[in-house]
Image (tube, rainbow, N blue to C red; front, side, top):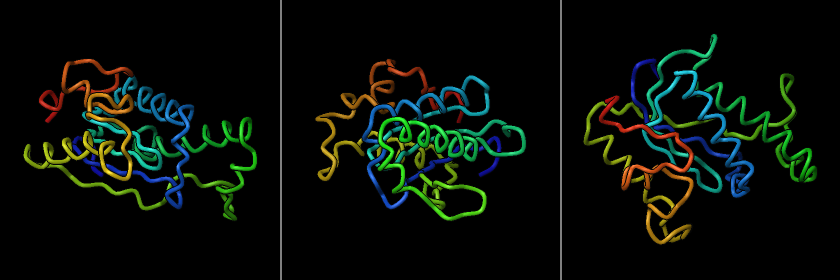
Length: 173
């Protein structure tokens, strides 16, 4: 991903486990995105937090030290997931154990997907996809996109974002 560009980005929990069904884990994601936004490292144009993956449309503004904001996000949330599970579900933590020299647990799959969005039509297609994701048959997380709390759909419908994360794409695209 390049600084100054808008991307559709998907990050998935290892082995598609439903780690982020837990509201505390969703909160870790929200806190990390809020930090990146407050530091002006990103503009978050759309998001949805699903039980085992997230979709974002974001513009990367700057590096966080030497790393992209996406790397900072996965690193921070991974550390926070580890702390949370160690305190609340130690047995579940072991499901994420890895035998790597530089880390003991891996929560995010290594192959996060990113797609450069360079036309408004592409952006709107992904925005619609993100907001309708919770309604898919195998999820059934809400009856309408706006009812799903962990999404920017309500923001695009009536200007309210429960977590103060989303920004209008028109302002940054």
